[in-house]
Length: 419
Length: 101
Image 1 (cartoon, each protein chain N blue to C red):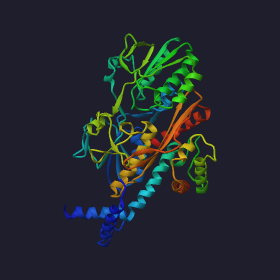
Image 2 (image 1 turned 135 degrees about the vertical axis):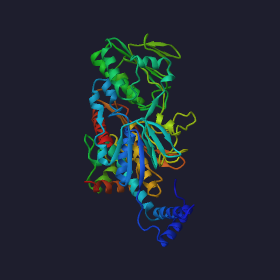
Image 3 (image 1 turned 180 degrees about the vertical axis):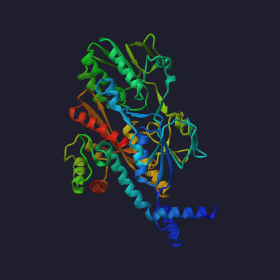
Image 4 (image 1 turned 90 degrees about the horizontal axis):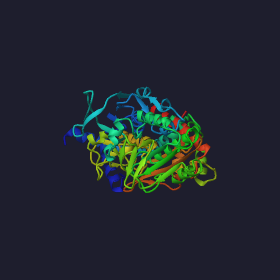
């Protein structure tokens, strides 16, 4: 929201009247209880900045997991370049910022009473609620996936964790000459370049360890969604003949016994299957009634404050929102900062920044020594949302310098989120 | 609306007129600087190949960003970033990073 001249005069007049009556002589300080749900890239960052910019705020961060496992760099684990230990980090530093950590699941949210309930039986009230639950994977949208997943035969590995480790073991056990079949969901989905980076990381591993093997990428989109020149260059020059790309090939079914993925066109047999189903905003968003886009999948927010367009005092950040912004961990941390700044201003009775600016920086590795990036600055304009600024874009070819920056990026973002 | 609420409302509105605009401007800079730190390290102290920004001289920071934007200084990713900000934002960011120890 921007102030027009008439609003400004109204406020000035009221302010002057208030000052004359002696109601306000000191700047107001943000006070209240902010509860953040989910300690991933978005939630942990938001909690930290709420405390930094609003030192009088009470901040509670609710997260069921013991450890933070990073999705960025998890493709490197699949390629054998990193281990699960490298992408797993503790939450030990967050309480030092004055954040109250609650290790629990949220099971119900009452936005009228401004309370939520946890599985452990606690009822927690809030002045402002920040939901950063990440994604829910729609496993029902691919027939047979749930059964194959429960049997440990087929995983998505689209939330870094045990499935990442299992997929790596499957790739290690695959014979030389086998076929790795991966599917990409129709956009929007978490991490647009992720499937294509994963293809490169597996190809990099095959090239060294199992050179007669093949990769078939079944894309539910009409073309490569992100960094197309970068990835097609890598497939053609680094892994010639290894990667077969099939656009418009969304899987409709998967069978973990016969190891076949069925698309609208044909059956594709593989030695290792990695099916990534479509996604929607995390479950906590449904509990708060803020999955409010036309399909009921994602959350629409005021992008200057990240407050829900329909439920007051509830903010949503990260992959769960509907916006013309990439669903990346990096973006989630920057939603978190704009959201934290807005909440601090609102709880101090002030107007939030009407024109925040955020940026995305996303590196993808194309081999164990090369990476490329996409980078954009987005400037908020009322009525338009975040407008991508000139000169944003991606590298056409991976190189060693950007691999060094890719590694640097991971160290710095993890330290920012968790340090 | 009771008397207490009216008082709170007036106090809030007065806060906006007295300090709200300046507060939002500072927060604008702080938020942008915080987004820089995602790659350049917490508090502007990098743990990797990206350079640290904390304690840089303001004039050096501003000139470097202008040179990235114009292309006078060749860059990998920084032309794409620098092009998204105004010179006033370079000045404000430069003053902020210079103030960090």
